[in-house]
Length: 381
Image 1 (tube, rainbow, N blue to C red):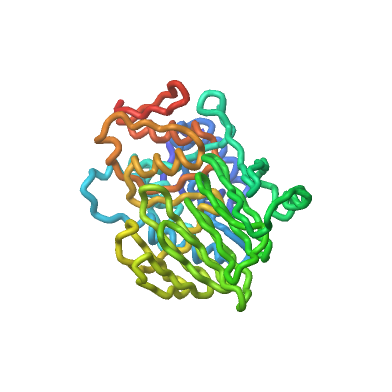
Image 2: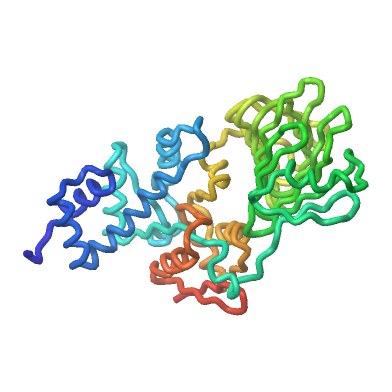
């Protein structure tokens, strides 16, 4: 085979391959190019990752994947002027048509723009990174129930019915770093818990209101009961709903975000200030003394964590590291403060190998990493 090849031609072959439109002869030709030319192999690997991320954005049968992906492209990938040099910004370039976004992803790789996704696997190299922690439910009588991501509240409730527990007393569910948990309350409400989160709840709702307390992040799908409102207490706020779906994010020393997907909720702070949210509206509170601030939110960006994805747009490495530590129960140290301020856009996927992220991060040329004493240390190359 002639050693000369047209990169534009290679790009189209890759697009045809990924979209299932490649012919048998072209398929063989592309395979040979990948085998013989390292630059073609690199492009092939990078564009597989772009294409895989596109297919990964799916929450449930009612979620329109194509619309969500288009919205995500607009939110994450449209370049905007920033203070840092472009080489410090990780981006996934796009175009309007269904295959041009893929072509421009390849073009970005040719130009040396690195698309970095934080790929981690919870159990990967666990003995080097940290000891595994378990999901626990501390019952009102002080006993501890160990749980797994596959358990349901109804399942383990059967095991404690004979215990001497007040059904209206508080129990505490704790989801540690590196874990997530989904379960159903006694009233039929379903809750998705993110890592490093805590929920206080009764076994049965015996009061006029169905009341729970949250620290961290959770998605609530509240069962409709008009005679018994559902309330969530979080960071000095009270969220009241009847039958609705909403996400709450409220980690220690971070702002509180409430995002309404369906129905309506009222949010009230300790000062008596009250706001009604409608679908597509969110509320942001910087701290307990801050006023309530309503704003629109992007559902794909906010809810992607439920599928193990965290999309970040022009965020600092320091903030991305905080999320990575929370999701994967690892310690990350960024030694150079200047590196911590670098901005990146991309996606964190907790279902991918940890080595993938660090290797791609190091491929920028200015960053290197090493694992020391159960800690990932990122430094300047």
